[in-house]
Amino acid sequence: GGGGASGSLSGDELGQCKAVLREIKKKDIADPFLTPVDWKALGIPDYPTVVKRPMDLGTVSSQLEGGHYSSVRQLAADVDLVWKNAMTYNIDGSWIYQSASKLKAFADAKFSPLLSTSGGGGAEGEVTELTFE
Image (cartoon, rainbow, N blue to C red; front, side):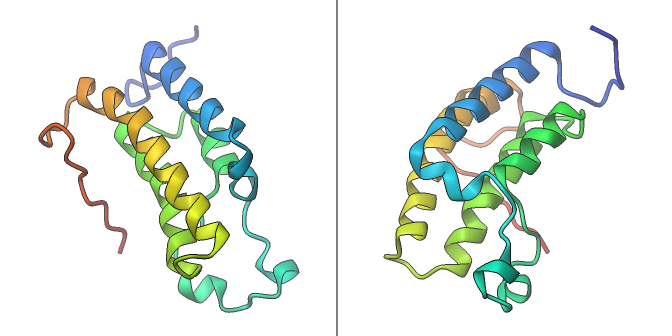
């Protein structure tokens, strides 16, 4: 145990979140999303100008372990950002865009029951639009 701030996820929610992340990361198509985009190595210098807030599953995992998230919604938003970034930078139809799109659907389905139990409204099956300015 070891308490921790009241602002972090409960043990039960934390366990469920870790399980969901593990499932997402196990998918073959999740490989490119496990580590931060190395735009220098990839030769895409415009990446940081297009993607304002880079996010990857490895970063999400370490932040989850570190007690960074105070709600399932926060965690789900960062996971969603991983896909949104890929779909923003890569053209529709590219393999990376398609992978991100498939993983987004998978992650949304996995987080959906967790989000509905942790409150925060939104009609059933309705995706709350998350915008990062």
